[in-house]
Image (cartoon, rainbow, N blue to C red; front, side, top):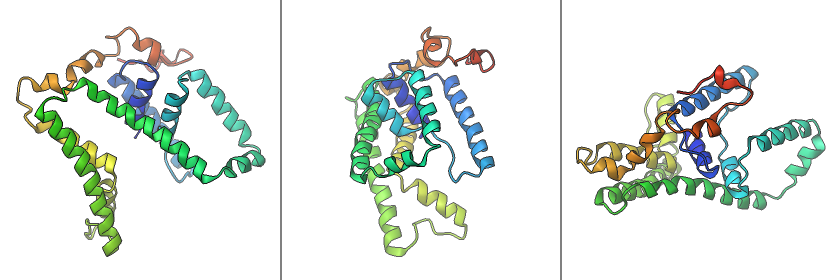
Length: 232
């Protein structure tokens, strides 16, 4: 979720593709925040917000200053219960409609990257079609199996293993991503034209943080923190 959100945010913010070192930096900071969550006794960890990505696309405001001010407002208003009551009084259909728009923008950001692939080849069509079809079919099978039998298809003596497998294969996005990645790395991989058709040539220039001069503009840390947490 966080990786996909970072890519979508860079897309809607008009930034260059996220370099691997920036990915590592973001996931590292997220790991530290999850450790702090556990120390504070929270029920869930921390992840990048897909809703905020859709909000960025909707408002076209990608300034860090806006995020800082919004965070201060949230901290301030959290001290007053009346403000929380106002938010809780918003009807659920309004939230549902808003979520439909925000998640649609986030999904569209991922589909936009297909423009760098050659969709005229049979290989690309096969990978795209089988990933979308099985990405919807396999989770549906897992859900119906659990509804009918009361447990998932993975039903062994290890409860942890059962939960991991059933949760992963009940997520359409996860199943589609796994299938697309495996097929992209194996199907006709030895053909000379595949590297060009996959769109990897477009990503080559973003492998290094220093390769593109705009990376410093988009991904530099504020308050001089880039000196202590440099990107490669």
